[in-house]
Amino acid sequence: MAEPHDNAMLAQLTELESRIAFQDDTIETLNQLVTRQNDQLHALARKVQQLSERLEQMQEPGEQGNTDPANEIPPHY
Image: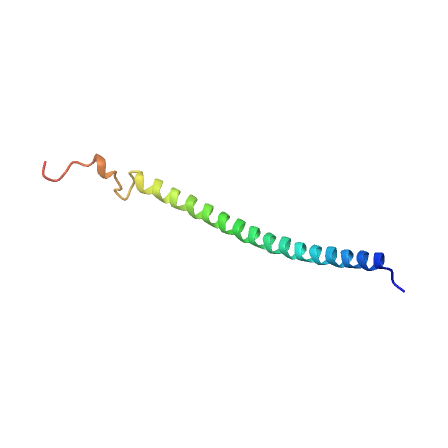
C-alpha cells in the first residue's frame, strides 16, 4: 500500500514534469520568434543599405545630370 509520503512525492514529480514541459514549449516558441525577428532585422538592414546607396547615387552629380537642387540657380535669374 502506498504511503502518504509516496503520494506527495509522486504529485510533486508530476507537477515538476508538467512545469518542465510547459517551459520547454515556451522556450521553443520564444526561439522561433527570435529567429523570425532576426531574419526580419537582417532584411531591413539590407533594405536600408540599398536605400542609402541609392540616395548617395542620387546626390552625386553624374552623367545623368543629377545635381543637388540647393546648388541650382532659380530660373528667374
